[in-house]
Image (cartoon, rainbow, N blue to C red):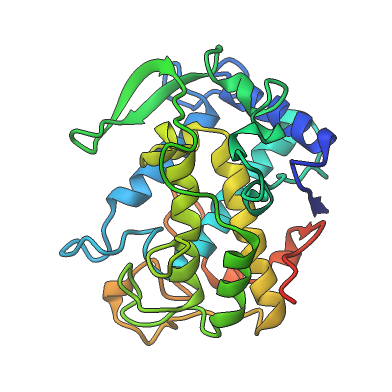
Length: 296
C-alpha cells in the first residue's frame, strides 16, 4: 500500500480531506466520554500531552516524544494510528496518508502559492466550519477548550527546507542518534531532522513557516501537520534504505532516565496497547512511498 505525494495525486488529497472532516465530526466519530469532542481531537490531546511529559521530569531538553531518540518512531506510530481511523472514515482499508514534499515547494518563488494551499485542498480549512476545540494557551502552556477558527501565518518566519538541505542531512549523518540523546545532541540523523542542530532546522522550520496553530503543542489541529510528518517519515525511510534499517539508539542498557526513548520501551500512548520503537523500524511492514528522496 502506497503513500503518495499530495502535490500531484488529486485522489489521495481528496480522500484525505474527506476523511479528516469525518474524523473531526463528533457525531460521526465521537471521543467517548468527552462531550462535543471527536476522534480527531484525541490526536491533538495526545500530541500535547506527549510534549508536556518531560523525560526525566528534572530537565526540559527532552519529552516523551520530542527532542529525543523516539521522535521519529513515535511520530511514525502516531501517523499509523490516524491512518487506521482514516481508513474507517473513508471505508477503504487500502488508503494511506499522503505526504507533502515541502522541499519541492521550497523551489517556488513564493511557496505560499503552492497548490497545497488552494481552496480545493488545505486552503479550505481557514475561515470555514473547521473548528479548533482544544488548543494550547501560549501564556500558560496548558491545553484548554476553545471554539475558534484555525490559524496560519505562512511565510512570516522560518523557511521550507530545500532538496539540497535534505540531501545533506541524509548523506552526512551515519548514526541514528548520539549522546546525550536530547535537543543538544551534536549530530545524528534524529536531531538533524528534528531541527535542533544544523542550519536547515528541517522539521522545526516547517512548523515555523506555516505558523499559527502549527507553532503550538496542539499543532495537529492543522491538517497539514500529518502531511508534514508523513514527508518527514519519508525522508527517514530514505535514510533507512541507505543504512541498517534497524539502526536505532539507545538500546535497553541505557539509563532509565531515557524512558520512552530506549528501543524496547513502550512509546507514549493514550491507547491501551504497547508499541515500541523497535516495532516502528520496518516501515515497509505498513506501507511504502511512491518515491523516496533521491540522495545521489
